[in-house]
Figure 1 (cartoon, helix red, strand yellow):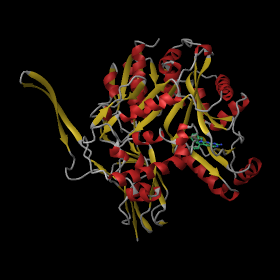
Figure 2 (cartoon, helix red, strand yellow):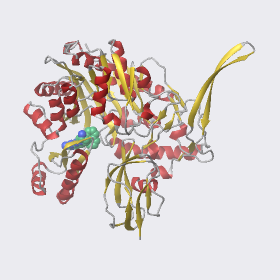
Figure 3 (cartoon, helix red, strand yellow):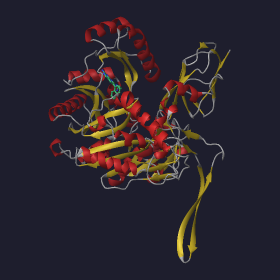
Figure 4 (tube, helix red, strand yellow):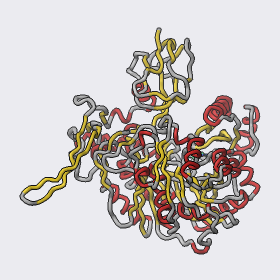
Length: 615
Ligand code: MV4
């Protein structure tokens, strides 16, 4: 077994890995960016090493991280998810440095990074893939003939793509040209490859994935499936295990195919085989070669500690169980509690947690790196906590999740809790009929309309943080509340003797950055229902001035225009990324691009002047 494991990650997953290491008696090395120094993973690890460089980029700095691993004497690296988790070069460099990368081999990671290659492997292994090509296509001509062959709609996908990037749906032949160019351009700009392929597009699939785990001796087992259909813009919001309304026969075929595919690949470590399910058929989509965010629901229904097993098999041990030992029991639901405002298009809401109280109920697990007073940083994803709840059946799990959501008290930032409360009351969700586009295309309309109505009837008075202490989430659910972001400066502890009784008090100086200025005003209703584009433009710049500013610290992903170009109001001029969420920046007036003050790939602070449109 290893002696010391470096966790090349932060947040809740770093905490989760440290817990598994503790159980195995392994020392842990935390790495952290400057602003992450108060992170829970830093406090929990046996050793702490500070990363040098830009906070938004340091967790991707494989060379620096590997150097720290060597200096710390770590014999393994757990990459968690995101960052370096599916970086085949990093996995190879770890191996060459004699530090075990906890994941599958670099070859498998590399292969699964190509969707065309993944399809080839799976097809060869006899796993059903969506009808389509296993060779790249380059011309509109080819795409049109495939459109004839399979019938519209078809999907054009970047081979290096993932998470919806480089995916274009084509519903009629006229649109082929533009869609092909779009998929190629996105593939090139995000993944450095314009290789694309074509599939028949399935309109209302469910996203069901199979958890697999394999050792380095050829033993591969599956831990059944998860349904991850409740998602928005390829960000999962709620997952459950097992999938509702999946019959045993289809479940059997799906899980057997996942194991067969993984065997053909020579897979080791934990992984996920993602599929789409439509009617009584399933189709392979992609393999994720990492531990996933939603792994806890599988742990709850199988009793297997996937992270611990991942550490054990990486050290060369055989799997500690066989397929026949796995008997899934009951039902588990995970709600992703993000610092995002579901009524404002899921806009990230970083800031200090003025209150953070966990639901303490039996059957409830919360994976989080947050604590009261912790500040959600703008550099990283907005996941605050994963609320994971178990019940003997789906109904019991849902009821317990409702209770837990009501008693999960978070103040200081907007959260997705109101979204989850509404989802657990939604007829389609309750009957198990959610498909991948359901949240975007159907649920959100009802959710925002209901919130607007509620705020009309209640006329909730403006509420300061802390005033909403009864466990309801009206603050963000029903709008018209104002949230001031307050910074915590310094806390000092005192003991106070009052008539012999000793009180321990902690006194915190609260600095309101600009006392009369409210940093963020949340208003539901008319504004929340306004079209996305309109609001992106408004939030990006003062209306009509042509001075395009960033509202948040973030990254300029792409610039669509050049200096001197003529633009029209509403035209997309940039793609901006803050807290891992992309938004379009639109021209707010007609005119000529006079100045571009940033380059694509550049990180900028809030309120930076990005671009100027003049006459
Ligand atoms: C599809 C599809 C329908 N038909 N492919 C989106 C991200 C990428 N991993 C694959 N995706 C899809 N591929 C065909 N041929 C629908 C999606 C899709 C989706 C898939 C999984 C989870 C959520 C999704 C949301 C929208 C579209």
